[in-house]
Image 1 (cartoon, helix red, strand yellow):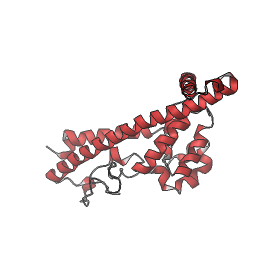
Image 2: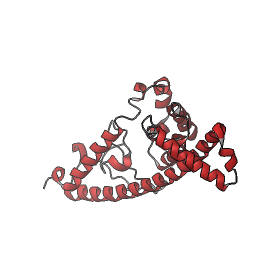
Image 3: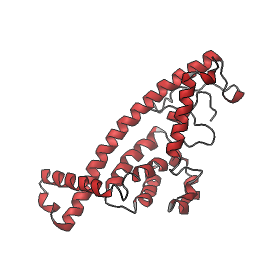
Image 4: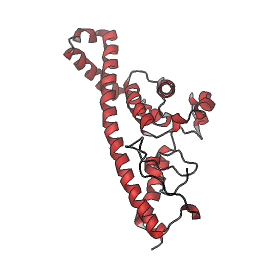
Length: 227
């Protein structure tokens, strides 16, 4: 069976295609100038490679800061604040914007209701329930609920990311073994072998994405793609 027809190789192609489709509406280095607000800072963003890195450090910082920001009552300012946070914390801008899109005009009411109720409960447990009364108290409750809820969501996303990274390393090892057994050379040229795991980022596969792709290498890279 030709390697390109092997089910494992076809799964890799399907995963790469699916992830590119998910990333299409999000800002990436190649298209950041098309987005409102972000286009004003496009050149500065392109010069900062960490904004487009899917290594574990930038991703983890973005998950926690972005999740909290998404649940705070700052609708309309989220992308601008997200850009500032991504630069300040050296996070991933693509992921930061994706998190902000979760709270939009369609989901804003139920999300803020939940964060308000959560904030009130937390403030009551801390003995500050009276401070949650009235308009100003409602704002306090939204902020407290946003922070607590955001951290909880970020923790779940953190665990999910680690699981996905582990599965991607396992999948990549299988794919590398298949390509080695069948003598497959990606693009018709032999590529040097790549380490399965970066020693400095034990939770992150270091497979480079396909040329021209900003997709996370953990999910899209071929074991013989060149950086």
